[in-house]
Image 1 (cartoon, rainbow, N blue to C red):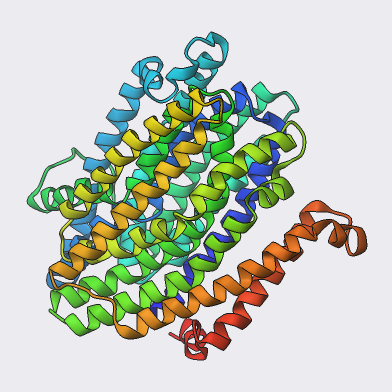
Image 2 (image 1 turned 90 degrees about the vertical axis):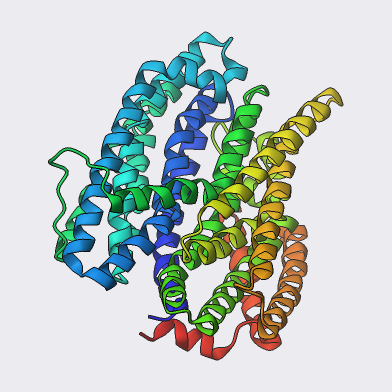
Length: 518
């Protein structure tokens, strides 16, 4: 399949999941509000979200797929199946042991990521309970990642892209179970665990349909092939998870400001949308092709794949970033202000979303640039860059957080600034090192298309700004619903960008036909 078509398949399924995710978050935020119970729930989600984004969104698969694909091509299906099975048993044993240790030591673990609220014994204990319930999701996501890698190596993307929807399908009923915030939070934690089991079960069925027979029965063995997978997977997972680690760091610092975790989480739900729809989808789609180009030393093919992937990613990401920049409070207010989540909460969360917005292109570029290293089985270089970004985020984030707090301002805004700065540093390090090694330099066509996408995004941003500042007229004269009127603004902005992109050449007709062909 073409890169555009693979991306379209994954993005379409991810979009369906994210729409359900918005419905889920709207319900949960309305029930829990922005306060200690929601902060406890956000804390309980930190590990599941981290491991879902590391494993389910391609970070582990980025390290596993090249090894599995190379074995499949060189030694055949039976050898590849043996690699997958041994790797799966080791991964299961390790994550299960980690989960058990976390259950025992959770009160002390949360001192690191939720220490700012340790004095609030009631809600701190709630955070410990909720996190203990959600923690086994780690093992589920580890197995899901490996099974997805097997499917993706065979150019099967639909099932691995669709299973995250099960999480939202489980959480929505949990949000409706009661109007008592504490009961809702506990039901949601149980729903996360149920979703993990269902996701693994569905992927297991999909792998068996591809005639790959795997079994967890048997002692884990560290074979040479497993050592190779682990040697690539550990640094590769860290490398592809720099952004998510930075989010954990930000949330940990935010625990020292009540409701800040809730505000950051709400902003996270919006700026993560282009990352999941575009960055992850493009990164997963180009990895198998880059791996084949690297094995055959096809430099021209790898260059063309990277140009196509980055061009597509920027054409879809820049307008999203522009919209988040010009209308952050408007978007959060339209979708989340209801129930216990107030207008003042939207204004606070919108401040963070504005600073996340200018980092969105960097978040996406990291996902697209890192596979160029993974395809060459170099996972240590991007790992070093990711860890560099984490250090920058910690130092800058802590400094801005406490400085703004002493100025009487909301300190958590500094955490959003630091996360975006760290992402741009990571993306620039990845790009400049690729160029220095002669592995990849952007071609003139890509540069031209990116400039055109910037122009089209500017046209759209101006249009959205005008509509937002005349929003009340839209509600008074067309539709008296804040959410639906906001949806009209978003759809109109998307249409304006599409027209501007075609007129400037940022998106070409052959891109559309390429997305639809096999």
